[in-house]
Image: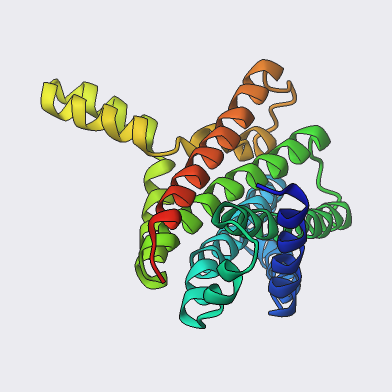
Length: 259
């Protein structure tokens, strides 16, 4: 894999997604926060800080998730449907470079989105004089980025061998299941059924454990003490390693495809 070619192609993917007006989503996020900023005090006064903190981070996660899934599942299929893939693979570009560039380009877009939304979010917190743990907020948004990068890898991998519609549905399913994998293991133990325990353990090993990359509660509910640095590094490494593993699978599948 040629690193320079991959970076150049990733830059093209980034510019292509930006040209699709994806950054208008940032304005949409600001509007949602503005509405919530005005509406929440109408229902509660004492709990405004925690509700707005939670709402802002949750909305940021959902907006990023929509971008990661709907754009990620179509990145490869769009090239195949337009037949531009024939031109690309005819050039001195390896298929691994093609997949890696799609992932890096979309991850860069998500990074820009998360950064912009975090700035808007902090602006509203300052405007509403909401007290918040700064470091915990930044860690929560950073791990939202890691989580969305993992979901991007899932979306691209599924998009390599199936249609965009099916890949979108499956990626949403992986996201939902990935947030409850630890609960599934606990449920399997409670069932006291060896077969059920094996199934839940298998699901836990196969599906990504997205709860490891979720620090929103730490930021919202005033946990001033930072999480253990070793735990943070381990969880971040888990997310990156899982993403690389998925990309390796996507590359292997893509190498076997005929066009």
